Structures are given as C-alpha cells and as structure tokens.
Image (cartoon, rainbow, N blue to C red; front, side):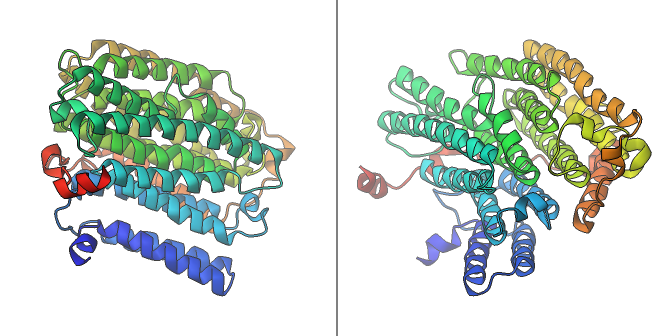
Length: 481
C-alpha cells in the first residue's frame, strides 16, 4: 500500500483528506464559517504542496503541466469560494454547508484529471467533477430553472461519458493498454479501429468542453444556475478537461497525414465562429459568457494543434489569462446583482459604482484581446504558436472570431457608460471577500498584460509524453480482462 500511496500526487492527497475532514465537520456541527474556513485551508495547502514530487507511477503523471494546470484550478476554486461566501443564491437552499463540500470535490476531480496517465484515473477524476457539478447546478432545489439546468446537464453529461467510455473500450481492444493516450501513439495493428477510438474519446471531451457542435447545453445550464457555479463550470472544468486533452495527444503528432487533425481543426473553427455568434445576440450576461467560453475553447485548440513545448506554453498562458478574466467578470456580476444578470443591470455603472465598472472594463478588454490587458498577449502567443505550425486556416478563424468578439465585449462597456437607473444606483455593497477578489484579478490582468514575462516560465513547461512508460503491468491488464 505504501508505494501506491506515495505515487499519488500530493495535491490529490490533500484535497481528498480535506474533503473527508469537511464531511466529518458537517456531520458533527453545521457551521458555514467553519466549512468555508476548512475549504479555504484545504485549497491553500493543496496549492502549497504542488511543487512536491511523487513516486513514478503508471496511473499518475506528476509533471510540470500537472502542477501548472492544477495551480490554475485551485486558484480558480479559491476565487469561486470568495464570491460564494454569504451569497444569497447559495443560501437559498437553507443548507450552504454541502455547497462547500461539493466545491472541494469538484476541485479534486479537476486536479485528478490533470494528472491522469491512465484511462481509469482520468475517468474517476472526470466523474468526480461531473457529479459534483451536477449537485452544484441544482443546488437551489426550489427553483424551476435550477432543476431544468441540472436535468439538461445530467442527460448530456451521461451521454458524453458513455461515448468516452466506448472510445476507451475500443482503444483497449486495439492496444491492450489502458494508457491515457491516443491509440496511434501506441503503434496499433488496426489504424482504422484506433482512429474510431480516438474520435469517440474526442467527441466525449468536446461534449464536456462544450465545443461546437456539442455546445447547445452550456448557455441554458449557466443561465439556470447561480453565478459562482457558472464561474466554476466555465473555468475549473474547462481547465481540467483541456489539460487532460493536451496530455491525451502528447505522444501523437497531429501534423502527420491521416491523423485526426482535420476533425480537431473543424471543431476549432466552428467553436471560434459559433461561440461568438451565440454571444452576439445575448442580452443575459451569463449566456453571453457561455458563448465567450465556447469561442475561447476554439482559440485554445490552435495551441493544441501546434506541437512541441511552444504550443504547450501558449496554451498554459492562455488558460491563465482566460481564468483570471472570466472569474473576474462573474465576480463583478455577483457584486452588482446576483439575482439579475440581464445586461441592463450594468447600466450606468461607471457613474454609480466606478470601481466595479472599471474592473468589468478590464475583464472585457482581456477577453477581447485589447492591450494592455493580459488577454492581448495571450492571443498573440497562441497566434505565434499557430504560425510556427503553419495553421493558416485556424489563424484566419482566430482573427475573425476576435473581431466578432469586440462587438459584444465593448457593448458591455457601452452599457456601463449609459445614464444610471434606479435599480443600479440602489445596488448592494460587494462582500469583502468578493471585493478583494475583484481587485486582485483586475491588478493581475493589467500587470501580466504589461509584464507577461512574470507568468511565462524561464524553462519550457514539461509534459510527460512517454506513453510507453505509463503502460500497466501485464498482471494488472490480465486482472482487468
């Protein structure tokens, strides 16, 4: 048992222990303050132990990519925790304690996915995240829209998980291995069967990432759930899944003929254009950010299709920029009006609450890729990665999508500059934790936009791509058979 335990990523161990402690604390005495403090301490300790190593394992890859993406997941979860504290939409359920437990479990599932080197470990992390999100989406059980959003999520999540497992089954039938990698990287005997397995696994991931044409559920789910959960779904789950997708293709050159590069390119282009088209016509801020999230997944696929450490570095930088701006936008929505997310709720915000309006303008500029916000350099970094891989079609889609995005991002700023309404002028005061979160994210977004070298590591991010070393022992494969 000791070698197995020592092979676990330290952050996974901390999050697992913290989840059990929090569950025990809820059982002994219900206290929202104690639960929130325990959740925060667990996340901070998990962040602190990320630099620690682990014993070599066929199940987990504790490399630089796992540490980087896990740090983004944990920091984003802390941001969601800050905006959830004393949130009236969370307290509507009259039992906010379980909210923090589900939040911690979702972070555990996402972190586990980033280290998954085996189909089983990845799927356990994926389902831990998915089931936690299901509980969080339907947490306001007496609201019809929350129940509707949870029902849509559980049905489509179940379908995508089934497709994903079918792909894993075909991959195992072809290669005899449960290594979490595209079957082509394991030298298959039947390339057609390997291609079918890869396409099925990709389809399941695209469903979870809400990439076009598997995106129709995202806007409805975000609209039906609370703002903190919408932020969690838009950021934490996307980081975990995209980090896992990069690991899945780590040992497979997407530039080679006959690969699935064309399929990924088509989904990337559809997501860039379709996500922006979805967002342009929205008047609800959560639905608008749903379309924005879909478009940014398309931009990230440019880095996925740019092989090597340069593509990996641009993907990491873009994920960090996207997480900061999106969490910040949701936090400002929470501070202005947690129950009313129509675009008109921001009308006149520059005159009534200029600090929040300035923060929202910074977040919109970052998402749009306008300097000096960090989103500008993130898009340039991804574009340069695309140029190095000669992805001309994807670069054209990135440019067109970015121009389309300017319309609805700047529309938010225009609405905030309009004359104030009574609804906005009588808005509530932001909670202290949320105010600190907004200030920190706005500062980080601007500072990293001016000094991007603070985030870019001196050495390239390392992604353990040696898929053969991750093969399960023969005795384990025989037992599974």
